[in-house]
Length: 322
Picture (cartoon, rainbow, N blue to C red):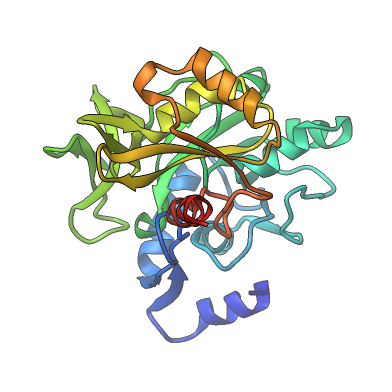
């Protein structure tokens, strides 16, 4: 979608806008969301970050999903000066930027060369969402002089409802909800969100969290648990332990098993399967070790760069049954 198309949709007489979920846990789903709630979300973000009319906002995300649409809505609602560039994994822009939203892949690519890194350093407020931020990326961003934030949210909450600081002395693993948002956990220790300005009613998520003093830390997704031999193995925890030891892209998934219920499977773009298996033996607890390590030419990702978990399960099953 082009900027002109979305602006035409935004300015028409309809009270709603069509958006699509990211598809990280299945097929992307269409949703109609109310424009007045998108405006409320825009004001919440701009007020929290101290953004004012005339500040520059960089649009480098596709307008097919909520993150890109909300950058436009923030600009229109709060009078920001929008800089529209072609979405890519390595965005390029000229001039000073007060506010930008990116996915982790874009930030990682920009950090890899000197000129791009300098441009990134000049962004006054950078928010990063749409995927997990690993420890090495967080370490690089901690020394940034300006504000860098990790966002927590989803299409249903019209982008983020909580932020955690990645840069400076206030860097933290804990997300702080906006003042208008309340959070709690249910019986499964999954986050439940009450954000009346952007969502009607309580929103129960699949994110398993730790809650303390009104803040929360994400441990993983309920649907990313592998139940193997009576043990519950959190996929994100396995990936976190392996990430600093494996240089090639990889993903943990699962497959059904008659004896154990489910088995741990690792997909990797590395062709050195023996090396990956050795790392797993050295790094992982005994019962977390993958039963199978499989090579793939490319890991399955959604259009927004998140792991496509369901597709990964199908790939593992096809490779093992082929």
